[in-house]
Image (cartoon, rainbow, N blue to C red; front, side):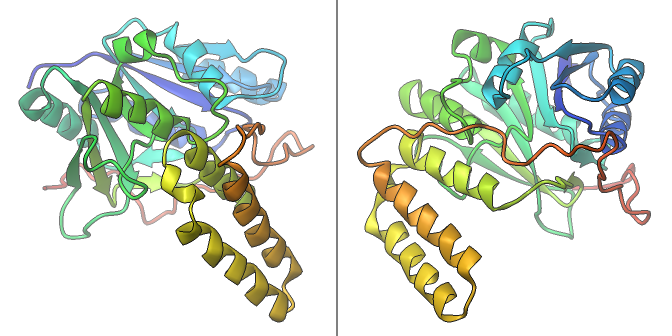
Length: 296
């Protein structure tokens, strides 16, 4: 296996202690990153200083509303390697060979049009990973690119940066462009050794992702097949005296319908930043250890 040099790029905001586990797992990879870069969005002083201690470079996001695409584009400018691993501050790789598996597939089966690969939580418990080859025919709502952990060729991002008007699911829009317009492909890995530990997942995040995909990537989401069931679920929630759920489903149906007529404009942020300087984050469970002896 030829050694592919890569930079790990992490977007952070008061992400300790979990980001320390993320970085420790990256440095424990059989093929570790040449450099770890964080794009930090106004973390408190203590956490910002702590980041300096575990990253090779920390870049401050501008003093403006946060945009995920812009954070990636800013970070890419600091990456000097051929590949970049875009990884969230809440994704822990507990098998040190996962990046190696991705590199092997890129080298053996990828070809010139290969964007790279991504790693997702899930898969078969009897083996280390499952992998799918994704192209314009197989790309779908169920099988897409996830930049929660994506190993990508940097030049493709430089040639066509992530669009900053895409407020959520920017990874899907970016991949869709290359798959549909440039006949590219990538590999999607699923593994139980990818731990997605996002403490801030909520309904607004899901709402933003569906609205974004409906307009920018997957037009089928704008149709009756998806809108009518949402309206039905909204009515059912009302009958069950669950007004907040009813409101959520109705808002989803409304926004999907309106995506047929106008471009949605929403903020990327999907959670309220806490006032506390030390917000809670989930720690890696004690029974999870880096899987040094995993076999496919």
